[in-house]
Amino acid sequence: MSKRRWLVIILSFASMVGLSIWIARAGIPPDTIKVHVPWWAHGLAFGAMVGEVITRAYKIGWSAKALNIELPIGLSIRTCLGGDFGATISPSRSGAEPARFLILAEGGLKPADVLMVLFMEIFLETGSLAVVAVVLYFLFPGAGTVVKALVAVVGGYAVFAIAVGVIGYFMAHRSAHGPPPAWAVKVGLRAGRWRRVQMQLRQLRVSIDHLKHARVGMMTLSFLASIVHVAFRLTILPILVYSLGAVSADAAQLVMWPVMLLYGGPVAPAPGGGGVVELGFKKVLHATIPANILGASLIWWRFYTYYLYVLLGGIAAGATVLRAMRRQEEEKQKGVVHRPGVPPEAPPSPRSSGFLRPSSITTKRVP
Image 1 (cartoon, rainbow, N blue to C red):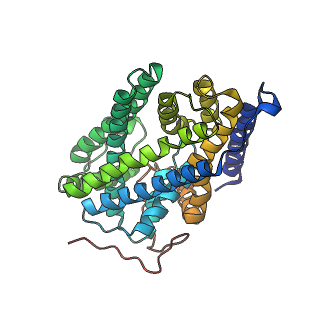
Image 2 (image 1 turned 90 degrees about the horizontal axis):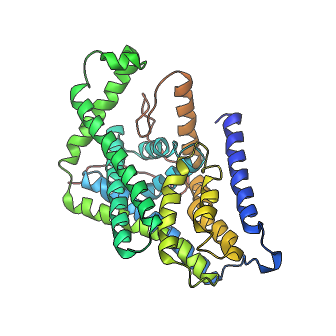
Image 3 (image 1 turned 45 degrees about the vertical axis):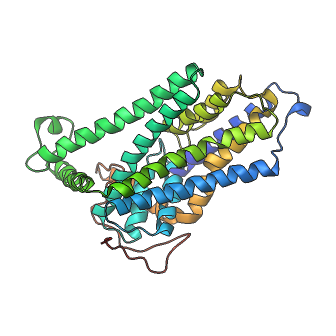
């Protein structure tokens, strides 16, 4: 990536750390601040983070098997962590899908198979978030404002994802061939760019057609794993807050607000949100978490839901992710419209790198 891009990332991380320290110390007597989380709480929080990654990896693996594509668990884990790394160092998480695409492609999957797996994964993620929102709504019926905010965020995300899918479905069946329509020309999609869009639409149509014949049993397992991995993340903040002595803190607030912060905050146009998540945490949870442990709760919650993913993702597939983001920047400089999850014009050679790198990975259809 360019030096300017790295400077933006460094400044964004610095603002996040600076805001965390300010929140931890603002207006609080130093001798009353609690920062030491019990070791058993660290163990539980780390276990929840590991459980989240593993269940998400199995979700991707089972999604692939539902489409009769075999995906090794090691490659699934690298894909998850690499996608997290790409998301954390890119504005509005825009680097997640290109990173996951390149990791899967270099692991041996064909571009068309990668698209089908990612399409299935996003489809199940949307459904699982909706289920989690409904369960929390009935589990905490008297939560008030946070319930409305939860329904709004998850509902908006689901509506957007479904709308994009529906638009893509109709375009894939009606606009995958022929010259660009009038509206495409008006928005700058002339012949060359429109041919590239049509190629992507044809690949999308293949992915949708394969979904019609997906194995229901594997889809069910993947859907359940998607729900479980979201649930793992939502346990981390209650573990930290209760371990610091705030046993009377409202569980509904500690569980529901992180959903909005985790899935809504990162859309800010800065890597990691640029401090938006930190400020949002203080705004919505200052009345729930005692002031003397608010800073420690925030810092350790961000560690187990963000910073640790940056570290492990960088180890697992950092070089691959940076290569994907560099390619994306080059395409933008050439005036090529690149959308997350869409393969580059020339598929990368199948080779692996990084953590959990198998010596020889072959992709085959499951009989």
